[in-house]
Amino acid sequence: MDTNKHELLLKNEVYQVVGCAMEVLNSLGNGLLEKPYENALAVEFGIKNIPLRQQARFPVIYITIQVGEYIPDLIAFEQIVIETKVIEAIGNNEKAQIINYLKISGLRVGLILNFKHSKLEWQRIVL
Image (tube, rainbow, N blue to C red; front, side, top):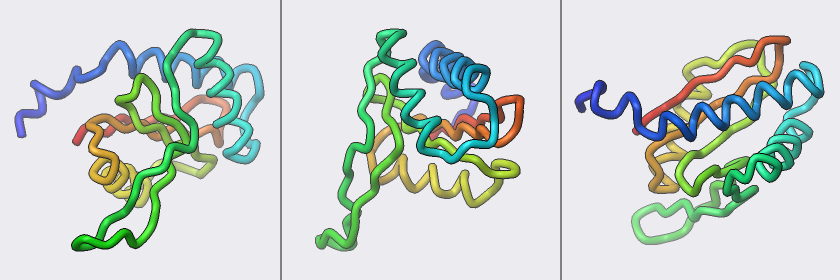
């Protein structure tokens, strides 16, 4: 895969989402549970007129049988899967999780937003 070609995929949308996350973190402070950040992001997206789906459901299919459901925290612009976290640091487990979520949802761009510390940690994943 040519990483340079995909590096800027949804660049402006990603920056808008990260900007909203920074606004939420600056307002709420760090270290709460994940759900308040997810809900506050949904409010901030509404203020900024960013299209969003919260807790959308995607079937997990094994062979031809649904074996579960994937429910991402948020989907922005109908194109970006967003997972809110409150963890020490974004690691390989979180990256693998978002890659699986992208495969299941059929979307290309994922964002992990970590609200644990006073400075927002975020990682963008492109499938």
